[in-house]
Image (tube, one colour):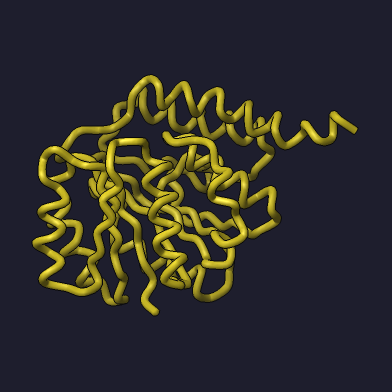
Length: 242
């Protein structure tokens, strides 16, 4: 079965057609699952139009806008029911280069890891284009903050360009994943780490979106900041009880 990439969308009409076309023409045949959170701009209607061009394009309309994590959890469950072996996450705004999907896929297919991360900061090199310096520093030091409290040796713990094996996602209790904003990305990696699965980072170049609006806001940053502390406390709480 083809690998599949989940693309969550909310008001991405400027990007969705070009993104689907790009993925459809990759040398490896990826299926695509668009998980749309009831975009008022008609994103889902554009996906439905593209579905007439390819049976590899799928759409899951996820109701109200309930956050990135909710969309991905719904997408993971949809993919697991259909027994996809390799399941990927990618943004719709071209901040992630679709051609890098092939590199992430090869890492999983060749058995190098159970979770592969397309990293902006691996090797202490910052591979980010068109972000203001303040946002680069916020993201970079957020990853350092996550490493300090979780002890994960990941350069880019908040990365959203990720691939999972079927086995890993089946092992994770997806109903127990708590966070719905970008802290979801940290929680998924930390859960993988705690379960003893292997994680590998490969370098990518991250390019800020040129169309559409960013979904980042203060509440998302706050969730990630305090969510890391909650994850760490949750992991040591049984030890403290003993």
